[in-house]
Image (tube, rainbow, N blue to C red; front, side, top):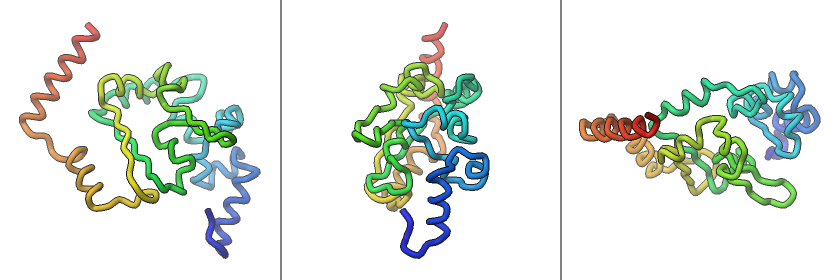
Length: 177
């Protein structure tokens, strides 16, 4: 949403409106590189120069993306309740929202999850995929949310957590052998 009198923002929106998938717009406007319209999937797959690749949505899949995701101890996805930057906000959890009806297709219902294009299903089955919700606008994190995130995701591991991680890894590996 552009503020009144913000000509740069309004100009960018005009470019996006009719030329989202052009090389010119994809190469110069970062928001276009993150745009995905479920109603225009073919145009998106053909013209997207970033998101279609990192989401592994192209016909030929990049197995390295999936293998790298599987190396994560946790993958936390955050959605902000009053987000006006990421639209629809549910896409922060890889959900799709029908622009006409508002119906949400959750990640677990999508082909990308069922066929595990990115390793998200694998992470989910290992209880390493986290859906986090924050009350407020996009990236407006309270001290409480930041402290919780840093404690959970960035605190150095203790000897106890290393033992737990090692045991969990052994359990996971035994499933495959």
